[in-house]
Image (cartoon, rainbow, N blue to C red):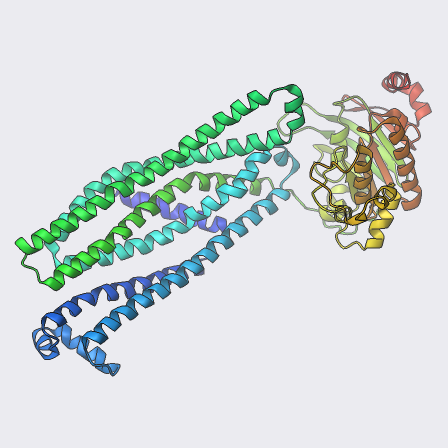
Length: 605
């Protein structure tokens, strides 16, 4: 009863995991059908050795054999139907054809299974990446990059293997049953003894198979820890080197890899133990059969030969079943992690409930009594935020660190949603706009440009993939990048290194600016655009974005700690401790905002 309950639960969980990775029932049927034909052809190929031996012992006299057994009468009838005479040559040829057919079916099955496996790898990884990109910002903030990349690269493949292996296991068990029945027909006494011995042995193997599940989970945890450590340290190499902590980091990395190594070795040892125990048991049983078949059972040479052949063929089948069971148990940790992450991402998908597809504002952007707090906190980051952003103007948002400036900007493209209050575009709630169209009208340049290892032209086109080369050059001219590009040997085809060693801080910002303006956005958000620039480069950058306002007629929002950069903005909003302290032009704020006046005097000095 307990076995029945466990099997039922396993099947139920397997079906849910199967649907999770997108394994279709049609593919399962195809695999099982191929396995069936492989089993049939192999069974017939092995079984035909028995009549071959009897045929030789009867001096190839078919009439004697047909008179002694209906089995031979059936063989003669089958051969006569296809117009072939029973002879040693045709019997051996039949065996060859059966084994050739078996190999052909096995080949087709192996290729199909490999294609299916790698297709599911691809499909699951694509699904992971797609779902992750559409999760809300709070979930993305909480997801460690190293953990996510390890699950996509390693655990997704292991989980697919864990889902496909039960199908192989069904085929192996069916083959085991067929071989077992044949052995029972030849010698039921010896087969029962063998079954009892193998059953006792399997109890020992069961312990190791269970341990494989535990070790498999530990391997997954070790892999995730290793990948997370690598990603974090590689992103912070300058900090590590300047802090002089290389030795400590190497020691910690060595400790992580040592744990991973131990768990991997332990996993291999469990699999090797099963092979080590099972093979001698099967061979010992086969040798015992030879002895008893001669001394006790008085079996014919044909029966002894067939029994031995099937016994030897049974060994790899039994080993395959043990290996498959260990693969399934070893993959449980991966399946659990993959399943958990997919369910998490499904429950944290970004809500796109807007129905207006044409994001075409003509008047202003209005924040009306906006409050915001993070789901994990009871404290409001933004409180009672009310102001208007005029179109076609430059609006700057300034304030001390931690005042909520970046969070405020995140609300515009709906990277985060307000806790209460509303944001309106021309008196239309932001929630009524389709998120894709809303974000297509807003371009964002961060203070730390994310530049991939592509060409200059390809990076600029990231803002508009179908852009022409003329558009790329025009965007580079507007951003002030074109003069630098003209000095390069390969111009816009120059490859950018991952470390960006070819670009200074100012050039990186200009390249990033070219990317965001090529799509001709309605709203341009610049987050600390001059944080890494010297005063001269900052002054040049100020001229650039003021010219952008005139040339492109777009609304520009700037977050900056540099008051000199934004002092000529059309509107400056002072945000302090999540509240608006004051709004106005530079001269107004010197009189109305104590924080602004103090900060201006400090920066002026």
